Length: 307
Image 1 (spheres, rainbow, N blue to C red):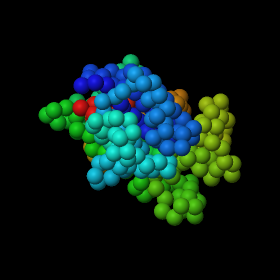
Image 2: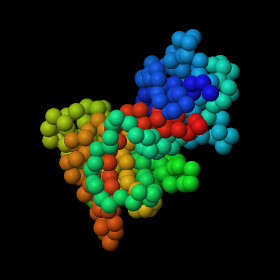
Image 3: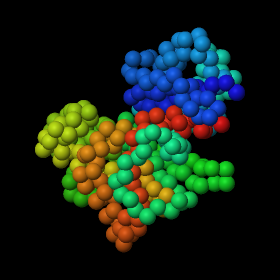
């Protein structure tokens, strides 16, 4: 078998590479989605070298896959991916679409040079379920279950469950968001746009997510308050999912926000909220929690899922 095209197609940027039979990545490319009208043209830009002729493809996309497994629409970008069209245009003989967090979850099982950064050591159980959750442009959630032939991944659209406020400040935030969105989902809060919305709600000033994080890193009091509230809600959500799925194998924080803000994520609000689970606080504290810093997580996972 020749090289396989693997992709991690997000709402903001896309990563592409060629994977060999051992899962090693070659010719890695990172693309700003805003610079391309659709995914087909982005892929054409990547495959502009005639020598790059992959035999097939496995594309991890940030959105639900159609029941036929051949079509997908990104949740946070007006892009549609049609495998038949890609096969015809680029001469691909076999292709597959997978959820982006299914790929991220499988990527957690790959040993890379970037080890996860531990937030909570816990008491891991080696063959227990692992939870992968990550805030970036949206919020992704997936689980890994040990199986006879390796790890089995269970994807989903976990970012779209309802937001459950935990105190008066969060009640007010939820009410404010409800006036804008109607139904308030976790992704409205635990995402890049969620961080910007929190800052707007608390301080009446709309900044980009990157600016809020940068100001917080520089010690700005308002930005720190915004990030701490974001981290607290993120921790509560991650802890709820960890309890619901009994993630004794570990909770892995993927997505761009945690990895780009390691110091801010260690300030305390995230773990405090993660472990505040009433009668099950002790159980939550047993669950290892780590931030995944490998930027190519989805590509490694897609390479595994292509097999």
